[in-house]
Image 1: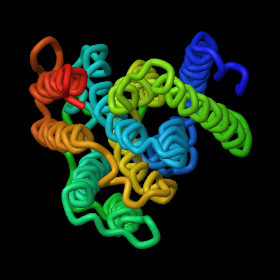
Image 2: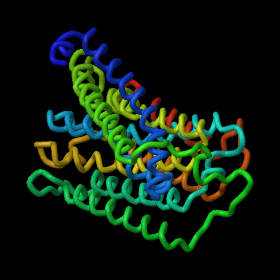
Image 3: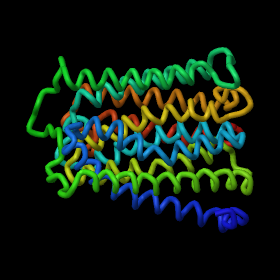
Length: 344
């Protein structure tokens, strides 16, 4: 890997190879996750949100932590926040290929609603960290600790509500809670072994993406925010794209939506992990104003998605609901703003 990083051709070759590895592992791990969700009794929505969402987030974790450790604050933060925006947009693509109804209608789930609410709360905490006083203890902002604790509390609350629900989505002919595919046969231990093997591939590829992202910034002179938000974040988010498209194709709708929303909630923790890895004080205040703008875009996108999950529009524009249209417009706006001349 070191030899590849010495030339521009090698850097882009490494970036491409790691991206392909992430794509292949993402496809393989999705079917295994659906089977594990069924056979363990966890359920597709919760398994997708926590285990699959966390696993497919591994490339982003490695990239953000590695770049923060090496002092690239803007790259680390924009990789985390840009990944959330990209992954939310992936749901729109999934909605387009699911022709029977609006995806947010068909994949109605209490767990997904709670996960999205948790996501908005975590993003709001990150906003407090970026816009509030520059406090830190041993270089770590207090918000980083609160983010990790808040995520843990949120998961506990979601699990409790799953076991003792007081709210249920109204079932319609288009509502699908689990995939229609039979669970994979064979010993459960073999499924877990395959799951963690593909997770290891994704992790190694994520490290390669982070290293090549740093070299791209050095070699091309491109903005860390642009490289992080539009290049490394999209590449490390490819497991979510593959997962959501493949899951929708095989009918695992709650797994698809749960993976994106749960993965987004977990991705907010990238900021906390990066803050621990960053040596020069609080990473929230080391990042530039574009990171704050991207954070605001993510809050808007997440709130709109929550409205879509609650509204459960049956049919929309071009088979996507109002939330899909607005999410696409917001993502396009974010791209235009951060790539505009003089915006950094």
